[in-house]
Length: 207
Image (cartoon, rainbow, N blue to C red; front, side, top):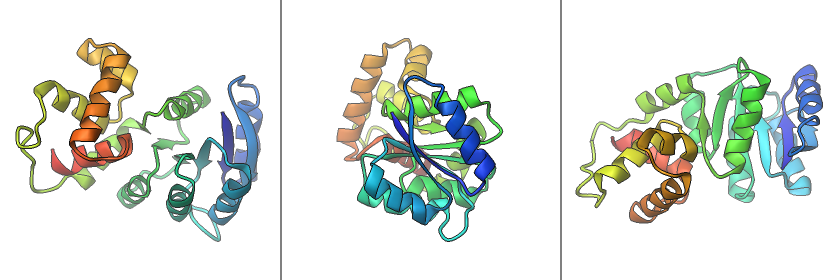
């Protein structure tokens, strides 16, 4: 998996690059020190995933995420930051970020989050998932029956909304990860949504 590392802190960029280079399934294809540079790097390098800081000069990570997802939709974006401010969380996820994790996590956790996102899942640090749920939750609730959702589909939707991977959902519901993937596909079709990120947003707005 080709990774672009974006952070205005040179020590952080270099440290992440060095550690990721030790992982057999990752290739650091480039680095950038601000959001604008990250966008231009995506034009040239077409990384599989961007590890993106939030607060940077010239262009922040939130706007950069929006531009990257608009123009390079296959590229995944994982926010890696020290900030869990509600506005940052909401904007980053609404702009299409597949992950939002904190720099306080261990390097092993960061690497695993990248792997999870590259497999097509979303990753939200638990504290962030809680904030996302409280911020995006709509006042008007949706009736699952009116949406044509079965109780099991609602269970899967809830766990996607809480940031769990297919494997974790399978463990909680005693299902195989393949069965969970099928449920996710059915939910996307029934709710006319594009991906897991939109499913998570839908759940947090309406349930």
